Image (cartoon, rainbow, N blue to C red; front, top):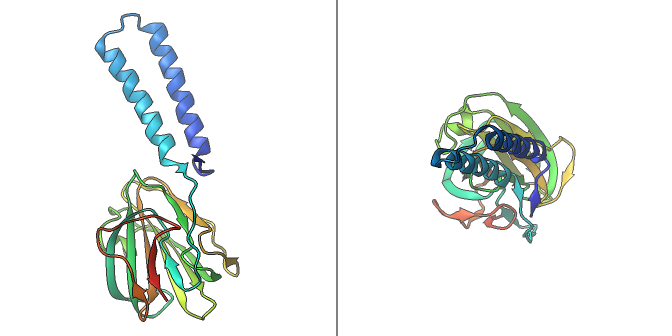
Length: 218
């Protein structure tokens, strides 16, 4: 396990700030009462939470050309048939994964293929588990064309706490299943729009892992 590149700077700054504050506490406050120890504990707990948020665990990735792999760690909050108007312009199956601050926040490509569409949308910061967050929140949409000609849309969505979506996708690139698509900081959601004739393998409230859990068969 290591710290993801998107979190190295903020992790180092956070730890340094806590070290400086701890030193100042020790130098200026000589009476070590319970409030002193509590403040110290809260400072270091905050540093631990920040550093842990950007953790990047080593894991064996699932690769299968006919399978759609989950793009994020978290909990399945939506499995339903919808009409997708942004790029697919057809009915499809939406599978949404909600990521709490406790989850690993790396996002991965669910299939291999060519990126034919990538677009950033500014928006609101409704809690990411809310159904309207898919179309109202700040988000980035990435459409991948599979070797079979089928198209999968992945949508990174900022949540109430998230204020920055990082997306590495570029139109025209060929990507591999399981590679990093991006990162969303501090609570978020990822929607995947899958062809209607696919077989879905996950249910509402199921816990999933990015790069490992199979969510559908094309």
